Image (cartoon, rainbow, N blue to C red; front, side, top):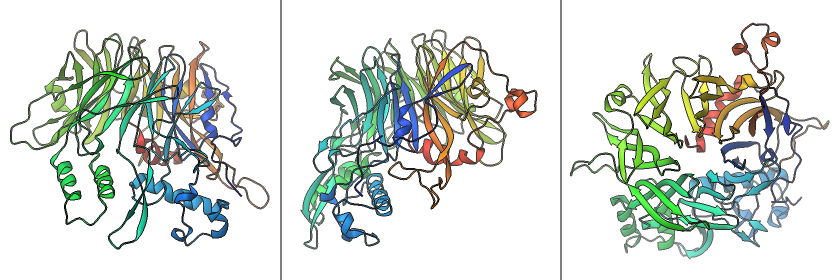
Length: 552
């Protein structure tokens, strides 16, 4: 059968769109229709939510780039050559093409593992970024791994993506004619306003350069990091491609050099000032917080991950410690870069440094520092007040709980995720909400109805209406690459799996549910809610979430 490449055409889950709750209204966002795993990215004050979709259903196959001879294990090569794939063959071909994109191969079609969508809670809209429509794929290519990081006013969306892949015909060293699938840059920030997409260009564009954006404020200031100079590795790579001794086609060689050099650029925290159409008016970069010695050849980098309406940005940067290079929380203000936490406090966290993840308009900064507790590095959340340079660390759910803040709003509320119990191996985690005014630290799962099928595992964003976008685990039937439920010969669902879905949480001023009677204890904190079991934690956090998400 021929598979429709348009995503979201299959009715997927029996999970209700609005889950019964008491202290929170919980809406499962419609991006559940797009894949088995979706991850929250951000939510702005209009309620527009951005979601990263992993392994989207029904990706398109470009038959002009598909050669059945490259797939000797196809069960129906004749049908596949005509685009009429059976499920087994289609699954295998999609897996290879996704590997091509993840590994930046020269040959073969590329299919993205991660793509971005926006949703208002009713409809899903693909955020194309640098992607383009073509006849070969009967629509967009879905070829570039794209992450969305923020939006403002429901109109300006920022994210990051490689360049659009295109076919390039060449003759290899053995005289064989081949078609490469390459692009012009390895990673670039963009802003999308409606259908108009504008690049946020790096200062230095050697081998395409590199830029990433992580947030945008209401003044249309976007912040991130961008390449400001080319390292020796990059210039040597260019010289090698132009050498007479290299037999590889020069364009193919430069593409390979670009993919290898994406982490080798000298990058600095960057603020792009945009106009209403998303075009860049000005660009400012911030230097390091220290001056390296003249003979120090290490390629130090820094980045900004959030910015408030006063134009004050925060992020992290590398510094030379006593024994090694470390990442430390940074403040970017008035064209200056300074280390956020005092040096004596940073020395206490020598095991891993610190990170600032967000700043609100009142000058409250949320972040975390790696501290040594019982001989192990543990991430501890801090709140820094820029008005008086005071700061305080918070223990989370218990002393050795790794606690990662993800966002802070203008009401002084921080959301994130933290370990909720001591356990052998991977510790279970839960989404939390922390109120800086009252020091109230809450497991958001305790605000759900006692029979909720969802387990909230990470709160990723919060807007000034206190609406939260979060990741949740739910048990559901196993679905194929086409989005269809796999069934046995009797028509019964074949397997049950833990899915990650994106939810919107809205406070409703209802009382907190008392679930102690359900679990036979008097302590609601001991509740194990109905839904996903702890067996899913390793899969969800190690393989999926940490595979693509920044801390902001």
